[in-house]
Length: 255
Image 1 (tube, helix red, strand yellow):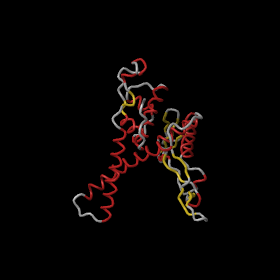
Image 2 (image 1 turned 30 degrees about the vertical axis):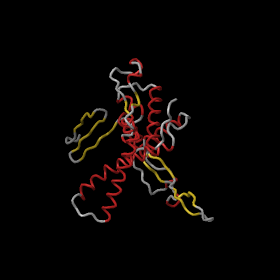
Image 3 (image 1 turned 120 degrees about the vertical axis):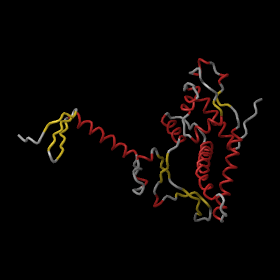
Image 4 (image 1 turned 60 degrees about the horizontal axis):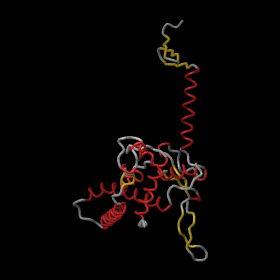
């Protein structure tokens, strides 16, 4: 018997140590756990791999999260000299973009075989608000780096765009207003869900959905409300109205 060897009990795996190497002999339980982990990782990679119509140039990236495929398009002149929308994906391939909360809302509605919860215009203005807010936040770093310097043409162009985006955002926020989407005094305590429920303001609702990418149920929970269907419907209606005001639509006057 080899005196330089000793057996160790390592849970479900029996480990044998040799002076110059380490060998692990796994039992059936350990092998099943490893196989389950391999399948989990394989599914993760498969879910993160774009479909065949996107080609091979877009890599599989689990860190990307959920994504949506689409065909890029541009306006081009046709043979008759008229402008028309034509696909412009590289080599005829689709592209991908990160899925946002609006995509998730649409997917949930389609799974339930229902119509879209928001109109295309409302979704577009919500995304515009998010993109401008994020661009302004990132642009603040560049503003601090060029502060005190003599601006060249490129820096003037950036500052003009930065100020223009700020004016557009200010206009959107003014049109959102200071209204309340969910008022506590209009709902009985037994129907709210929790005694500590607080009002949900329109501005907070838009920020949580468009910027923080929260679902309506998350907004209700954060304010102490129950997530029952009638509360989600009321909150969705308030969100639609706020997004319409951001576009520029004026609410109809009640008779």
